[in-house]
Image (cartoon, rainbow, N blue to C red; front, side, top):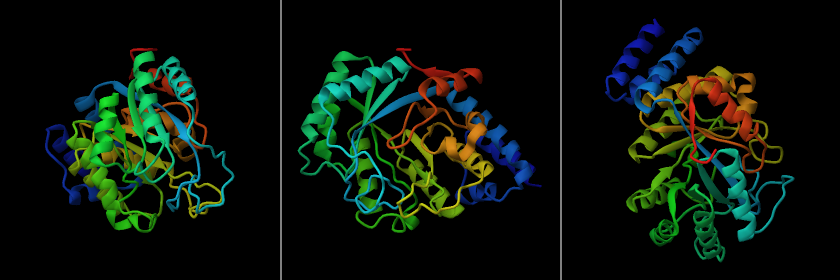
Length: 330
């Protein structure tokens, strides 16, 4: 019986033991009727290892569109024909204002995001550094950024400016990566995460489910993140955008999305699993169940090119479940 398997592996994780790949794969094959049991055990794992706190962050799309990379899911890729508000880097004042708004919403962290492959020879890098410093001087927010591929020198400069966590998704598994991007490699992404960790910063890295990957490839991503000792793991659900190469991808079933969250929690019991983009479209009224499936972090407010539920609704959902969003500023 699959529910016996769930209880057996759940006890193993709750006792502080590590799940193997083969054991995690068994959890992808359980009866659909037993998925709610899996969610319940994942919730117990979350409580056991991370308590009732929810790590909150809000982002600003500080430079939009025109990206040279061909990621098949991305609305900001220059390889796609998407109706998009493209613009160059926001001014320091605009980025600072976005940070202050995020702080007023109750965010604990604020992340500056820019479209593009990375910061090599990028004239905007020093402007971003100055914005990070101003946010540190004029708000109480923890600071994060997502600027693409970085060298160790870039990481050193960001740390000196006050960045405490850097975001850089692996996006998917190594075995599937070339199916979604050909203009840079999976290994380049891994190298940036290693540079971040080597500098003593926290790493925020996850991916997108529903790209066409198999269950095995989804688990491959989870175990890669575990091996890299990633601190925060955003789990996005593909929201197919008209004009991108994946515009016709069929959606995942809501229960499969929740099952994915739960299995990631079994594999990564002590880490932050972060609700990210696509959750509203994928889950609809079932969004609150994510927090009962092992989620203990969330991106509040809007995303890069799409709207969310709003920061207030996100925080209210967490409060209604007895969870405590981390915020010293709410």
